[in-house]
Image (cartoon, rainbow, N blue to C red; front, top):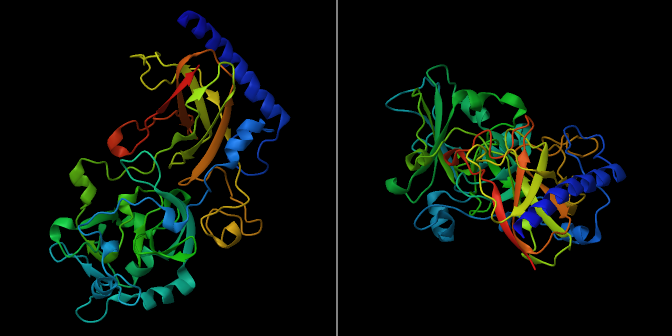
Length: 420
């Protein structure tokens, strides 16, 4: 029976490729968007039904998943307590100081003690001429799904840095958020000064963020002000920003380093499923949908592979690089982006979007997400595993080029399907 199933799957793989190629010949590749992965049209009615049920591209601000730290959680404090500790727009103050033990040479510090700390009105004054907006998926280093996808708005951190009159001996920027004034709960992160002052590889700037999807940051999202680092995992985007320290030290002070994590590697690319039928009838086509996190290395395609559940990893191919993968359809940019944006449309001036057409300059967009879909031709009765993966812009198949867990999740997902 198993030999027959394997023969069928071999034929199925050949037919699947013909099936996907025929879709590609019948439909159109996404027009005139550089870097676009292939899209196949028209879709089967069953698959089209699954696609219409997909989540919106952007996440409504109140629908983000939350992995906040603290006891009690800062966003759970009473309104009176939030006001007292500076967690409201009216009472927020940001200190920018030199490291006392390893000082940077500054012309000025901004401190609460002398009334010079930056307040929200001062930040908004800077925003009149320096605000930026960009799309970013917020994701945790150790969680296999994004927390949410948003358009983040703020003032580049370097605008505040230069107002200190910094001259030399600045090698790193330390920053921390409010965490109940308890040293044991302090959550902090850091960046090399070079990343703050310039934006390599066409990345957006590191920002002091005050809005997501056009709405003021809620306390749960890290408001009134948080850091957002475009290419980084969430622990670099500290919530409830309260203090920045400029230091001559060369090493990081990141809280996440204490958990044996890689604190410097940027977002990885990986694929995961959203809808997969667990039980199907023999010979019945199987519609599947999913998303891909588009990391720093981009995504050129998403692929799927259906195999008998008994299929084992080869010692010579632990990441299934030689498996008979088939291309899925990477879905085009949506007409309605969701996320509670007015009319579901991207705000003018958002980085990564053409100012005239309003369309993304490339697709899939790096540091964001993208949806995908596939219709798998029917198979005989049996137990199967469905796997999916991304291929990045350099041709590396997930979980490569960085398969190690501590630098971020990228394991190949496996979903069980029973055909009976």
